[in-house]
Image (cartoon, rainbow, N blue to C red):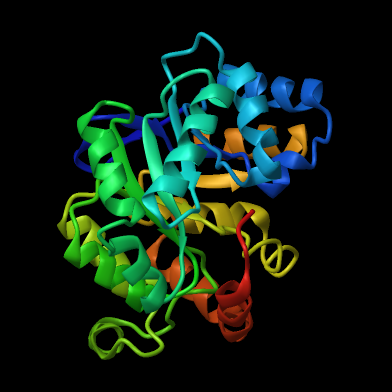
Length: 292
């Protein structure tokens, strides 16, 4: 499977990442979930994305069992708590469930300016993650966001994070081009993750991963699944993290990754225009969506 550099981390990861959130929990049984991860490994997937909150910890348990003894994969988990002491208790539990130290710990789901202030506080989670990185508990630290591009841009500009994961799909992208697109990004209100945040992350050489490729299934059926995945993989990201609740989804996405051909500029523009009517709906949905 093709791999790409994860920003300045020095790591290369598969362009298809295995999302272990709500779609992963759809396997319902540990045996089936573990088998899905093991099949992903056989297919060449190296990026596995879980969180302490997924399935109330069950996801981390299943991921830990499936990846036991594997050190040739890139393992990501996330912490939702904003206070350092609460976050540390969660991370200690995550380490036990995973059976190893994660490569990357994300601050999970940045939302508002007030949320950012809590993260940045003297007793906040950001300082804790910096300390854990220094102590080699994890190799890298980052943040995820699907709610507000302006707040995420602010955080990336203020702090030295290694990685970022953001909502990147063809519907949540501006249909403007050229100078109009640049002006929209500078204006900020109404700007998208793609036009406002992605350039900042790339300028700082961060490892960028994409999520919400299907808009939490709200784009399913509105465009071919292959085109939605190819759109996101055609962006300057390390990998597209996708929840794949059935093995046939995994097989199909792996085949796409093996033979990946980036969309042309014209194809990307056409897909953005086609899905533009969904943008406002998706943005409203993701402002309230709890990623658990």
